[in-house]
Image (cartoon, rainbow over the protein chains, first blue to last red):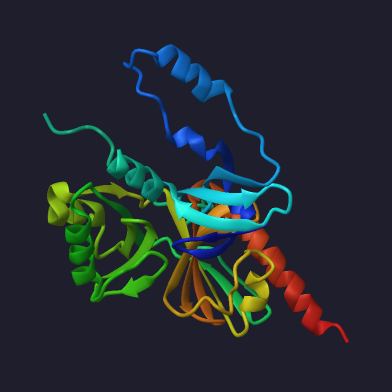
Length: 95
Length: 199
């Protein structure tokens, strides 16, 4: 599988480490009223789609960047690759 | 009272425990260890990215983007990640490279000395891509002069710097991997050289 890195171009998936669902970026605020329930959901509840899935990949053997990769789990087709920092900053900007 | 302690007799050793750099010539290619390189890493601190890039651009006589190597009058600079760079220089002339950089950059960047962390090899000779293509997963024909990539070579994380395409490359590897890298590269050199002698 080749991942088209937004800064470095096409790179082999062997250089990357998979972390999991891109929803892990949205860590709940630990002092909120419903923190216990929010962290339970954050830790244990995952979607398991057959189809498009947004996931986190770490370019460990490259520039050490975190990526949000949108991948079709049935075909392994990669539909979109973004820097996780851009995703997180956009989310913070929107909030 | 005069100092009775014996005079220090420290001898610099290479990563191979030898007193001379390792040089290996197989076929038309030569792998050379270059122990005389001073290395420092630079990471821009938040809010100072442009200032650090500008300072390094002055040193390297031009902007240094991610994935590129630029040779300045006294130092070489290459981009290793977003807002991060490696600076290398001649160790005899600039033993205190990291300290000099830290003084120049002040609070705008974090500078770490990497002198003993890495071993620099040069691999050169006509058609050296035939050796490298067995070792790294990147499009070497698309890797032009002055490219710098961090990638896997067998199980090792290396920086591959293209000085002259198909002629001369630098390989930086963690010092503890020096023997493994030497083994991997010389094995590939031997295999490709053997292929060309087959009738």
